[in-house]
Amino acid sequence: MISFNYECDFALDNESAFAAWLTEVIKSEIKNEGEINYIFCDDDYLLEINKQYLDHDTLTDIISFDYSVGNELHGDIFISIERVKDNAADFNVSFEDELKRVMVHGVLHYCGYKDKSDADEQLMRVKEEEKMKMFHVKHN
Image 1 (cartoon, rainbow, N blue to C red):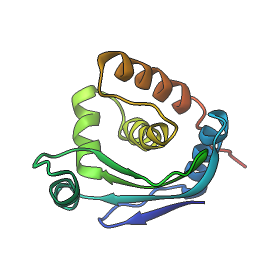
Image 2 (image 1 turned 60 degrees about the vertical axis):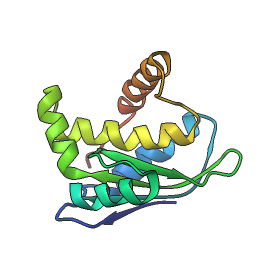
Image 3 (image 1 turned 45 degrees about the vertical axis):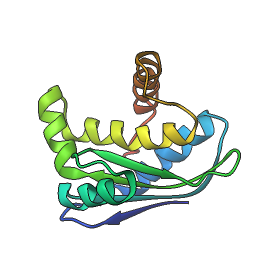
Image 4 (image 1 turned 90 degrees about the vertical axis):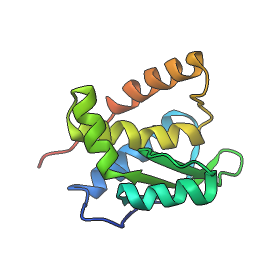
């Protein structure tokens, strides 16, 4: 089950569309969906997590804690809405596209993709693009 939690003044417009998309992403990687919690927050909130758990004193857009067991994905994905907004402006993309990229990035880590080396990062970007194209909002 995918759940969305808010620790700042932000809310997804269409939670069910985002959850359905992420479920499809997980299935497309031949994985099973466990409990995945998205926590949307601000820079200060995520900075504290970064310091406390990772011993990093830097701003970041996402921190994911992976509790997956085998092919069943579980975890907590913290996303700074402030960083996503700034990065969208820096990369000249829409806020929604950057948000989707960051959201799927966390799930892709749970699927086994890394981003520490140049080659791994390049594959991660290809996978992000591929999975972002799977997002569809159904209009009645």
